[in-house]
Image (cartoon, rainbow, N blue to C red):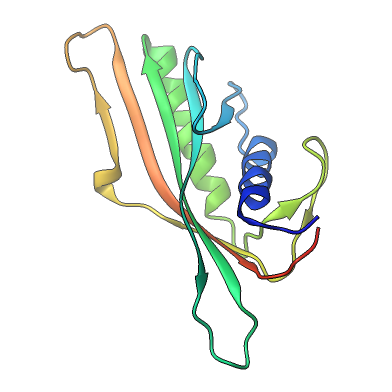
Length: 157
């Protein structure tokens, strides 16, 4: 199968599901648009843009995907707050891995890194909020980061 933007998005979500793990909680990975009816935290993966990057004539063309990855949900107790922070920390640890590459393979088990791909995370302090707008009983959580995935054009997996 050709590695197009949609397949790369699916592969990345499956990769997060495999690698972003916690010792205490399971956090579900959801590709949007999708209805999310989960109690607690979810990791939302949203495609923002897909484009071909301009390259020098001697280089191979590459497709770039900009993806928003969010830890989102509602914390209704200190356990919920702990789950949110645990998910954020696990996501940070994984996305900060050196030489991170897109992986292809089964949803469960080992997957192989796709050569010449790259995953880079960008985090801004303004991309997050912990907010309790009307109540002290519920804390809304939204922690965003932008992930850039680069894949060579014409790759088959």
